[in-house]
Length: 335
Image (tube, rainbow, N blue to C red; front, side, top):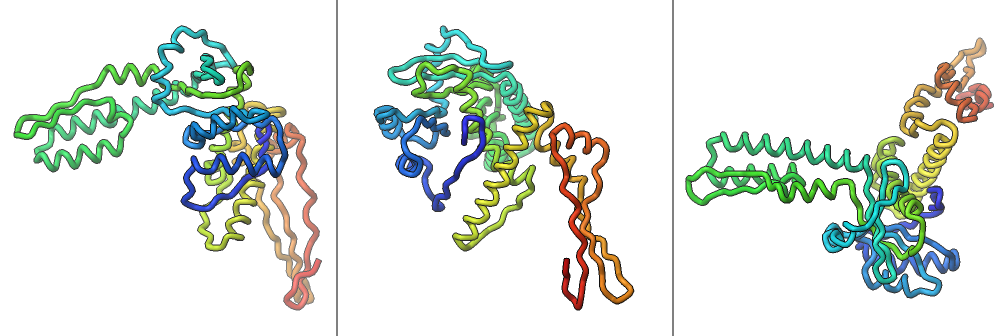
């Protein structure tokens, strides 16, 4: 994608391909196809290996990257990051920078993400706590209890790590309690991401924008299945798979273009809300019989409501002309 988020190209991999085995080949392929340039690879934590990252740092010119880190890495650098100052990169988003050798670790904190993750954690913990209280009041054997506890754990995996259970071997009542130390740790890390990059000296706001593009690309998968209502299709032939992905890529490119246009001309609106408004415009066929047994077919789109007309003017868009009529003759349709 471009720095503005517009998609340029995509690659299709064979099934059952491990993520960490793909990056090295991609680096060579992109360089061979498009030449050497100052590119920035934004990746999830499961994509690169330490060997490939070292190769990217030692490359001439260096290949820049911005990658997420495992949660355990935050524990390693949490103490060193404590004394670092926060830098505000935009409203509600702050970062801390920690130089390490030829890299910089970026601790990002999003206020919106804090609220979202905290709300999700509270709902899950409340549901789990209620279920545990229900189970404690049931006359269950130990085996039955363990099965139901396993089901509760599967339903609330994140909240499960915040609860301590004691299930004795005998007939003694089982107990559960809140692990307050883990809860404090989880609260402290909610809405925070630890990134690593070799973009030493870059503006923190720019690095945050780069990383949000990865989130937007990941959202594309939800977009294609949700906002754009592209249902799953299970192809068997490779050329059909390629064609389907190409069409999905083109649709996503249009979706990104709409999002950028809304940002410039109608801030506050999302592509989803606009698509919902445009769904009111429908294409219909009007069939008119003639006296000589033929039929005139008028393909027409419905006229937009005043609210939608105002939106079209705001976005500087205009609907195309109505299609010309078609006339049936001897079972065939002619213009």
